[in-house]
Length: 175
Image (tube, rainbow, N blue to C red; front, side, top):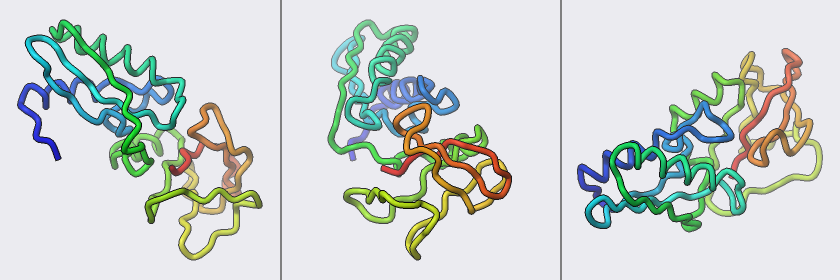
């Protein structure tokens, strides 16, 4: 773990305070995509940003927003680097971020128990094995939900329906 200087800690907090362009209820810190900040001389800063998946269309907007916020706070030159390794995981979303997703009506991702690829089933998704957590409805808390579509308003989310309250909701997919 790299130790940040007090200035880098402040700049990391500023970069992390930027709202996610696709899920503005979350900051980039809560989403876990801001990975590092380095001061490279007087008024020159480099920020490491990891997209939620390769080819994420929001990475450009995130980068521009980070640059804007840091420049508004006196940084003359900002470089935002896209860093693909280590890959982002839904485990990187903070507890506060998960709480905000739930309050916003989006089921947060379930914890990923093991490292490595996440299995994608092709059949019905209501059947759970003993190691899989249910996707809980963010509206009523019911664990009896079904998949309507593997993709929702963004590629990071699936569309589900609660079989208790019958309301549809987004589920932030596990990665």
